[in-house]
Image: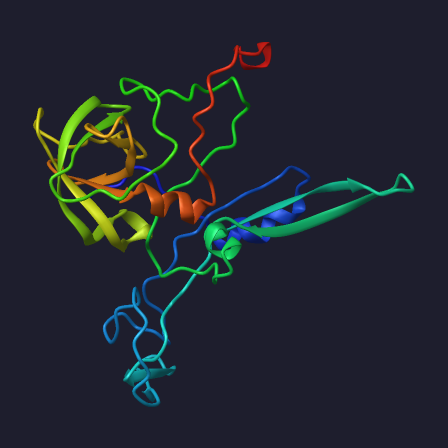
Length: 264
């Protein structure tokens, strides 16, 4: 599998972000294994029922490590961080550095935990100025305001930066997919994904199509997924409701406005 965009941020960035006066933001990949929750003993994308205490022993590197019956699971939350100066009521400026959640916002609004299992969604969004970006998807037109989960057999359209418009067919849902990011980023396992095969071309997505929207070919452009990986033949997409929920956003279907001069 391949993936073309990933935000890998080192501890150096986290340590130096507070030394500048410009706003900063970052994202990190949630680990799929840790010393206390090793992936070889437990699938960290699920939370097992309690069956008794975890067994521990000293590992090869001298750490106390689980040996059996791992309880709990890894759960993470993507965050953003920013710094800058705020002007107080008396006119003085105070330097501020703060964090805020990115993923799980919809869950928190519904009174649920904002943390999520290691890999459900690998996506980010950019806040753009209204009028600078069209609501219409290239080659596909305006999407509907309500997203849906893809089902096996769905015929879908993808609009990719490299491929343009492609027509594919959903061949699997609720798939567990290992994505190789290469280099120090390693391999990440994603759950709940959908896989599509090509109908009108030799590949369901190509390098450069990462982040491409996928809409239904029969349901008036209903958004079904966000393409983010492929193996040169099939494509992997995250169901759109999962993407919207993770980022706490909704689909903007308002009509386009006149392009302001600041965008030119």
